[in-house]
Image 1 (cartoon, helix red, strand yellow):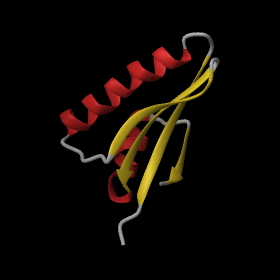
Image 2 (image 1 turned 120 degrees about the vertical axis):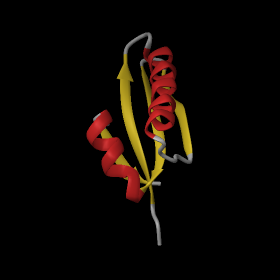
Image 3 (image 1 turned 135 degrees about the horizontal axis):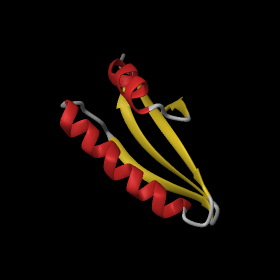
Image 4 (image 1 turned 30 degrees about the vertical axis):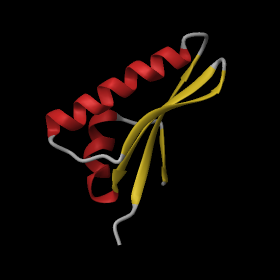
Length: 77
């Protein structure tokens, strides 16, 4: 069974949401350039001072994403 892993980057401050949205663009670009699959890349606003960018990838690709992009944390999706 191939698990899905959610890699997460947290951004804080008054521009957190906009920064997270911008980071998501780069996550998608990285996947295209490296010819890697992903299931979802999006943003979650936790409050006006905290937002997260995330990408959901197959477990087999997780190490490539992790080593290149240095997420703050990850979880099983």
